[in-house]
Image (cartoon, rainbow, N blue to C red; front, side, top):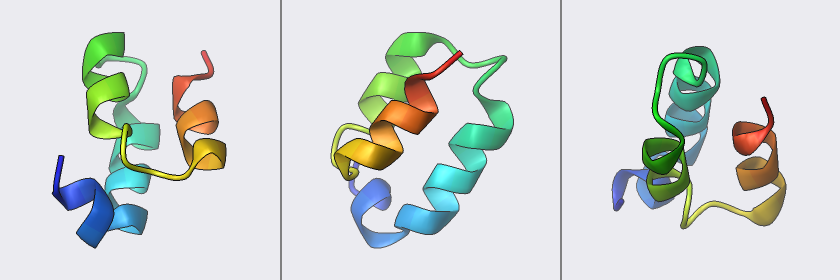
Length: 45
C-alpha cells in the first residue's frame, strides 16, 4: 500500500482506531511497508 509509506502517521492512526473491526489480512497488508515497531503495534489484539 503506497499510502502507508507517504502518509505513515495517518494510516497508522486509522488502522489503530479501526483494527478491532478490520480483518487481520487487511491490517497486515496495509502495514507491510511500515517500520516493524508500528506493524507489531497494529497486529496486537
